[in-house]
Structure formats: structure tokens, C-alpha cells
Length: 194
Image (cartoon, rainbow, N blue to C red):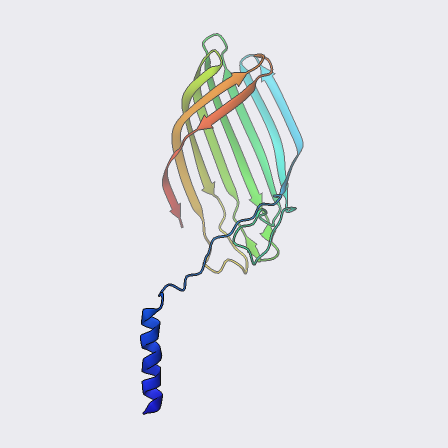
């Protein structure tokens, strides 16, 4: 009988002690991220129309550890072909911009997780009043191939999300070579994971 009474006594003491034996799941990582590079960029102008085509790359050079929640690196290569176009009429002040980026993601070798490829689309229309521009912006992020690899334990995830909102720009300096500050706000909708 001494054994059960002893166990009961310990349980009573635990009730008097603080009950939260919480673990902190947060993490912070202030470190260099991956290296982005642009080996190819070509641009054209024709009157009020401006286009450019480029290829971006991301090299996994940042701080990464499978033991951290917060990582400065994605620990995988990515290649991003990009097409952008702008129409700007300096007389009326109207401006339209659009960009399409297709991200080809490679496998993270430490987790054997291959993030799916992603199509990003963004467009805006603005009315410029001198250096100030006011308008609307929208975007779509559509994952075009499913996540895969041995590390994709939750299955073949695909996601998409859309957003719309206001855009505000302000250009400092000379009109031919301004420094432009851009503020965008988005209301997201249609977010889903399939």
C-alpha cells in the first residue's frame, strides 16, 4: 500500500506547481541569405512602350540548418525566367505595368524536398501627378507543379493565391533617372492548397 499512496502524494504536489511546461517554438536567424544573380537581361524601348526579358538565379549560399525553424537560405537552386512590360504616357500621366516570372525550383539536398515550380503574375495601373503616382495593383501566385521528393511527407502539395490593392509611388530626382519609392497593399483571396 505504500507504493500507491506515494504516487498519489506526488500527483497532488504537481497540481500545486505551475502547469505550463511550455516550449518555445520561435526562432530567429539574422544571417546572410541566398545569392541572387542576373546573368541575362535584355531591354527594348519603342515610344511609350518598354520591355525587358531576363533570367534570374538563386544560389543556396545562405545560412541553413535542418535543426533551425528560421533559415536565411532555402538551401536549393532556383532559375527564374522573367518578362516585364510597361506603357507610360508622360503627357497624360497614365502608366501600366506587368510582369510574369516562372520559378523553376530544385531539390533541397538536406531534406530531399523538391518545391514545385511557381508562376507569379503582377500588374498595375497608375495615374501619375508629377512625381506622385496613385493606382491599383494585383497579383497571382500559382504553383504549376506539385511538391515532391522523399521529404514531401504530406503529399504532393500545390498552392495558389491572388491579391489586389492600392499602389502609391513617389519619384525623386531627375525624370530620366529617378529614384522611385513604391508602397503596395494587398488584400489576398482565393488562397488554397490542393
